[in-house]
Length: 144
Image 1 (spheres, rainbow, N blue to C red):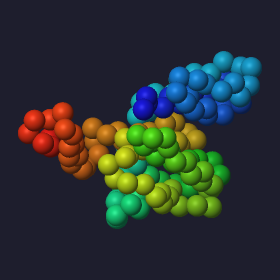
Image 2 (cartoon, helix red, strand yellow; image 1 turned 90 degrees about the horizontal axis):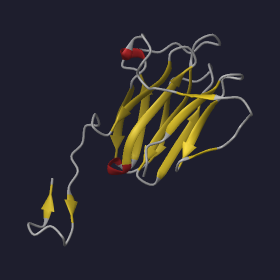
Image 3 (cartoon, rainbow, N blue to C red; image 1 turned 90 degrees about the vertical axis):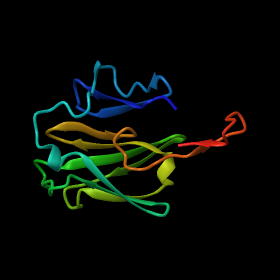
Image 4 (cartoon, rainbow, N blue to C red; image 1 turned 180 degrees about the vertical axis):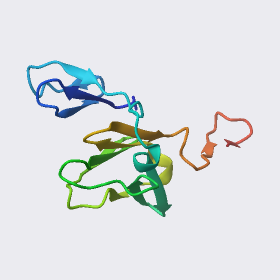
């Protein structure tokens, strides 16, 4: 699946998700592409931390606690999988974390959005698991 791209409306600050190369026109204003992990801010408070337990994924935003106030909070977490994605919206009353039902090998990226410091991501190159691929095309059987 193609990577998801997030855009932000210049007028209302809404964040939009591009699906399969199509960006839904939420409003008539221009949208700017959001670049993850680009804001000068504490990565320890913004990079998603993943914990898998079977087909349950717990995502906590930051290895250090992120504030959850009306002026500064994590607004949502998005788990991108090989076949789509799962989204959880958060409010200042929530902790900056969420649970997802997803197989570990299906997860390709996990995004979090801070209303002050923007978009943050951990992608499949940084995820801590090994993938074994088996196919009749591989003469040796499986590759790791």
